[in-house]
Amino acid sequence: MKKIITLLAIAGLLTLQSCTTSGSFEIAPVPTTEVFEVTTSFNSNNNFSRFVTLNPPIYSSDVVLTYRLSGSNSQGDVWQLLPETYYFNDGTLDFGYRFDYTNRDVNIYMIGNDLQYVSTNFRLNQVIRIVIVPGNYAKSINKKSYSDVITTLNIKDSQIQKIDL
Image 1: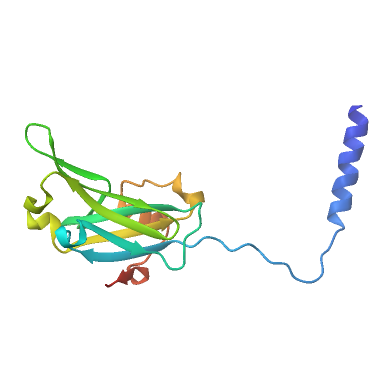
Image 2: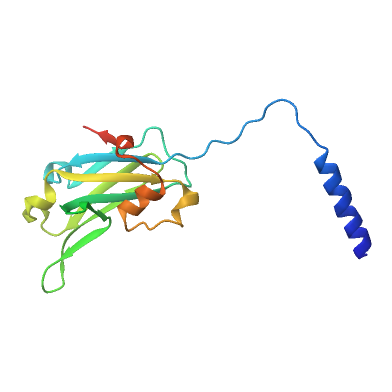
């Protein structure tokens, strides 16, 4: 039995080596990585949320990562991965940022009890980056680090698309 399987394997290899193709064929497109930047203020007029339409829609296998610019230091900008939560000294929820997405949009919003009283440093002119990650890369990158994500996906600052409303 082993000899027959070996003989069939050799015959298959020889047959495949002699095959040639003529003409052209199409390769399925590789999902592209995109980064969008939006500056927004969270207030009662917009229900403490920002809705961003993705045009064109993303692939259903893509993963959306959302980061908020929380400050800067000697190494550069500091980006916080959402969700992000802040607590009072007694451990109860003060406020936080969350997001949800579909293949057509991303909704970034604040949570908390008295959002109108959250410091304006956390509500006004917030810079948010939305990173669309192809599904095949999503498991192999350090999502907590914006820098690692951008480096792994080889994204340059010039490729970041600013969204103005």
